[in-house]
Length: 113
Image (tube, rainbow, N blue to C red; front, side, top):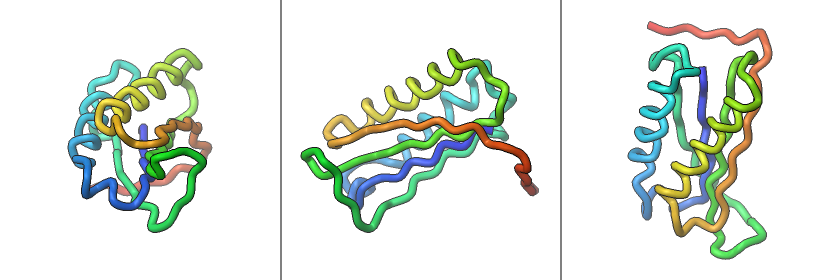
């Protein structure tokens, strides 16, 4: 774990390299000292088919960082800031960039090949 889920406004995938953003975030987290290993990192983007926000331009990317409990508030803050920094680098003209962190509570089940 972590999982990073980025919701974004429609069309962002046409004007920005969202795969490169996913790759950059994966690289940062896969090699982060507070992460157990690259096989635990997941990054995905979801396009919102409709949205309305209170700023112009009417574009957004919102990242949710999902972590297993146990990391310090300082490490969580650093991880959230890392995501925001990557969003700012990759999406400089997007109207709203936000990051939310949430701890995952048990049960968390998974199956991997």
